[in-house]
Image (tube, rainbow, N blue to C red):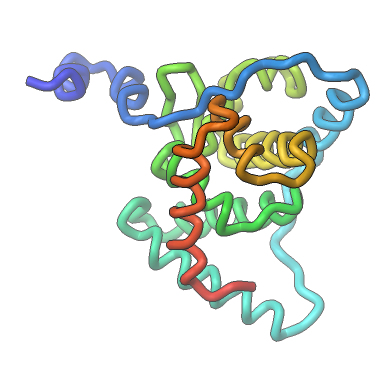
Length: 204
């Protein structure tokens, strides 16, 4: 009997989730007060409204993307409403942070396999595998909130943007820093590969 199966039979869902989460081990580093303040303000803003578009064409492009991405995600998230809610939130948060939506989808795919309650062996949580120390540094101190859809995506996108700025726009290095494997190729290459799969969906 495998360890994962034994965990399920013993009623240990947290262990099962931990076994299945692949990665997520950002390293806690000192933050300048100005950086901490800016990051805290960024994650504290209100949840987004429904998307608004300046033109009909922009809205139609978004709806095409949403439909195609939803179809691709169906095998991992069977319930339509849950799938659309996730994609709407990820689209908003990625763009809010100035990140490519398909890259963030690729990161979520690699980090958690689109599992909301995934926990890595290092203790990282949720879709974007955010380490609990971030809740203390720039959040309200409650790591349980990292399992909330909007909170997790906002923290993850904000952190990746922070690392991208630290690496002067070098996404390869920023992804390595996000994963706690800075300078090594395996993780960035996995994310870039997953991004290519999502880029096949119509872009907005």
